[in-house]
Image 1 (spheres, rainbow, N blue to C red):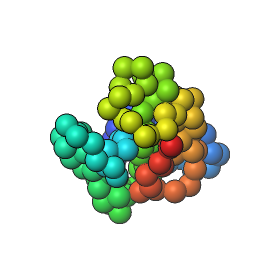
Image 2 (spheres, rainbow, N blue to C red):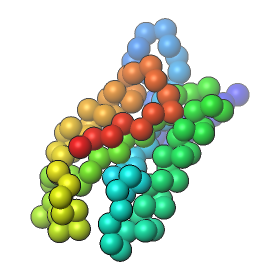
Image 3 (cartoon, rainbow, N blue to C red):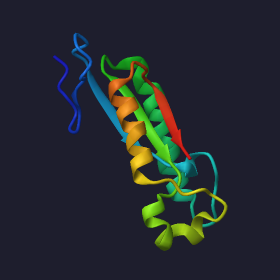
Image 4 (cartoon, helix red, strand yellow):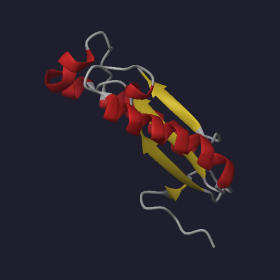
Length: 111
């Protein structure tokens, strides 16, 4: 028996009966910043895990990867110069697509 992961939920798609695992990563997996190698390592590891785990798991697994959030741009914006901030609401749409969609092993880049 496969036990559900914390934070997983049943898909709302009738008849599917599969659980969905979704993780968050970030733009540092793709674009580097000064003082960001540890964050880049963590983000890249999450993305690699999602792709590899999709082959092994019976559940769907995906990640959402936004740039800096608009709501936190005042605090972190200087670190992400040149990156277009995205509202949390837009990133939430990536989660909905990850949960309700049919794909697995995908990284949903937002922004």
